[in-house]
Structure formats: C-alpha cells, structure tokens
Image (cartoon, rainbow, N blue to C red; front, side):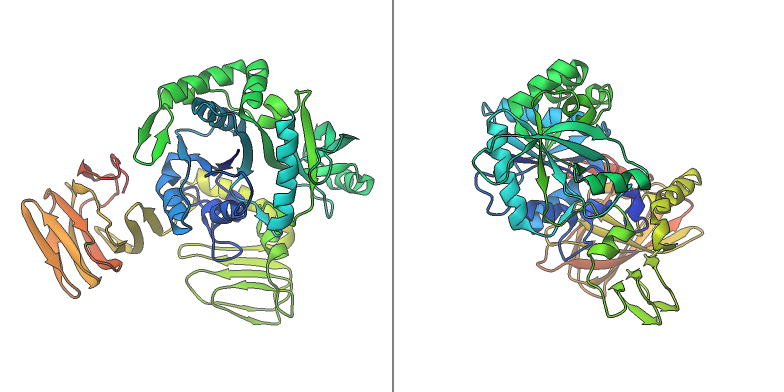
Length: 477
C-alpha cells in the first residue's frame, strides 16, 4: 500500500501579499480553480495502491484543510495537527509512527502541498518506480532534471545507476546533497548533466525510515513518540501533544537521514515540476497573452509586456510596464521587477518588524462555518460581511466591550439571544448588546450573508467568551 503524506504547513512568504501566515500558498488557487493542496491530492487519482492521504498541517489551518478536502470529495486517512513547526524530519517521524500503529507497514509517499506538476501521468509513472525501489529497501528522493540554472533550489549530485526495479526508469545512488549555489556554480551543475534539483519529495517504507531515524536522530524519534502517545483525537483531527512536540529538535529529513543513510537513492523526474516559490515562477507557468503577460482578474493594459498582473478586488490599469510583477489584494499592493521577486521575503520581514497585520491575514478570514470579510474599520466601530455556509453554526459566545447589529441580506438566520430564539429572513435585523450570550446559525440550504456592525469601546477579536462550540475551539473565531 502507498500512504500519501501531504506536508501542508509552510507559509510561502515570497508570494506575499496573496500568501499570508494564516492563509498560505498551499491553500490558494494559483494555477487553476483548485488550490495547491487540492491539486497535490488530485494528481494521485488512479495511482494503483494509493490510500487516502495523511495531511500534516498546523493548528491554524485545520478547518481550511478539512474544507478543501471536502470540496474535492476526499476523505483523509487523518489530519495531524502540529502545535509548532519543527521541519520535515519530525513531521515524517510522526507520520511513520502513526502508520505503524495500524499494524501495517505502508510505503510513505511524502509530498509538499505547494508544488505544481504539469504531467500527472509522468509523475505517476515515476512514483510507481519509486514504489518498487522502496519495497526493495531503498529510501527514495525524487530529483528534478533541471531545465536551466537556478539559485533558489538545492541540488543532488547523481551517483552510479542502480539495477532496474522492473518498473519505469532506473534510479541512481546519491553522490552528494549540495546547498543552493550561486549562479556561476548553478550553470556548471546544469552543464554537467550530473545534478538534479532537490524536490523535497520522498518515498520509503514506514518501518525503514523509522529505523534510520532511530539510528541517526533518536532524540527526534523519542520526542515524536511522546507527542503521539500523549496526543488525542479532536473532531476529525489528531492533535499532537504540544509540550512533547515543542521539545522536539527541528531538522529536515535531508540532514537527519538522507545525507547519512547507505540506502538512499534518487529517481530523476521530468514532469513539468515547479515549486511556485515566487511570482517569477507563476509568470513562467502561466498562460500568456500576445505580449507575454500573465493576467489574473480585472486588468487593463496598454503597452505592457513580459509581466505578471494579479487583481483580487480592484481594477489594475497599467501603462508602459516591462518585466514587472503587480499584485493587488484588498489591503495591499506589491510591485516588483521580475528579477527582484526573491527580495519579497525581505520586504515581508520588514513588515513583520513593524507588526503589520497584513503579513498574517487577509481582510477575509476563514472559519469552519464560513468567512468574515472586514469592510470598514473606524474609531469605536467595525463593519463586516459574514457568510455562513448551510448548516454552519457559530459558537455560543458573548462580548463585554462591544455590541453587534446584524442585518440579513441573503438567506435565513437562526439567532439565539440569551433565552430567546428568532428566525431572521432577508432585510430583517437584530441587535445584541454587550454581555448577552448569543449564537448565529444557518438553517437554510443556501449560504447566509449578513452585515455586522460592531460598536463599542474595544472591538478586538480577543473580546470573546466562548460558552459552547461544536468545532472544539476555545477563543478563535
């Protein structure tokens, strides 16, 4: 059996302002109508022997991950919640421990959730070859045959060819892992045809990688075993113990195992891979117009070429641009020459030092029951648009510093206020004064939309006392 393990915990700061700490690139639709996470799972469709995926993500992404799986009719084997990020070695250790608990010893297929692959057929063919080698005792990493010199990736030097596993192309031994090179070195690597890009995708039997981890990083395995043992189910999730996992050393699977093991091997892959790690990468894979522009959203151009323009909420009108990136969201606009997009990370770091909320979240916030769009904020008031999906139920809660006015503009709302319940239809409203316990539900079959006006001396999101919640939350949302 192949057990796909999807790593969905990264933040993707180089794609700011679209990607944010609480809404990262793997949860965004960047290439087509599906998100990166959804496409990672969908390209496994039809892969012989593949089971339902295990998704590993942080606690703050849990409801978005679950909703995105529901949208594509995928039932996860499990969704494992990391209380803190500890890199790939602990994440894979947890996946292997959990897999072995079932009494099986599946082959783990490790896939980052934020990669783009053009040819699913070629990808699956190489995975089949990887499965055969993994069953024979190899720890497989997948190297990307480079199309050009690239300084943003690590490289793997190919060693000697291995005997064919009888399925697809043969693997090679690993001569060396190499850190991200400068441009001159990258050109030498590509010209030699002896190097592949390090994709961060792996394949190995759960028992074997666990044995290797025990040999090389026993402290990581001990901490992860403790985090799993003390962990607990939480609705559709498995929550690792925070104290135990926080004490786990942070390390990548490359450093922890792959650079030390004698069983490592690499399968070169040519399947149209791109990690979409920058706006330049999105320009490269995007569909271009006659002037080699990639355009998303409401964009009007005059004498613009070789550029990427992405409008989320407003019109972008551009004149005379060449080789530029322009990205607009509801609360930020980012402009950069295409050859400077690697510096976006530094821009985000600068914003973080200023404690700018734009690095953490969008004006739209996702909840397990729907979304909240922040429309207007002023002194002592805030206006939101709240959308509740059919069957969605907000927590029973109260606020001590603000009152709320709700006006239904679409659908129907079942409102609880203290001991009273009322059903609101379109163009009706209610007022909830500070200190009153209240709850909002959508009993209908279409999304409920309402306008919320918050007023009071303090309107921060931390002014909430949650009394009951079907989603098991304490304070957030």
